[in-house]
Length: 128
Image (tube, rainbow, N blue to C red; front, side, top):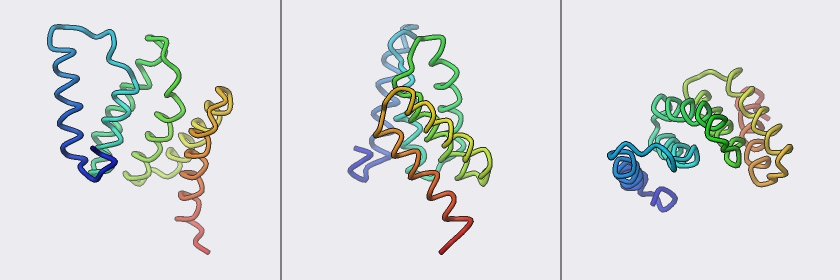
């Protein structure tokens, strides 16, 4: 729904799903990917603070839960949240970390997205 321009509705659905899953006290199965999707919707809604909180949690949970497949994308999204908050240097570090992780994992799509984000950040500071 978020990709169809209905970010608020998508956000509500994801939150409902997470609440239904965690309500009975279940924490297993709440993947860092889910938190990343939620954070991405917050970014679409112009809410970088909320996104950053979720991304920090997701990146902290990933190693303890043995989840790494979405790590590059989480770093890229964290960079986007930091860029939205005006923290360009920290955003750049996140984009570089995302590129590094994606290369280690052979995740070309995530690498390209992180490179695009890094290029966009550079273009903001050095317009043509």
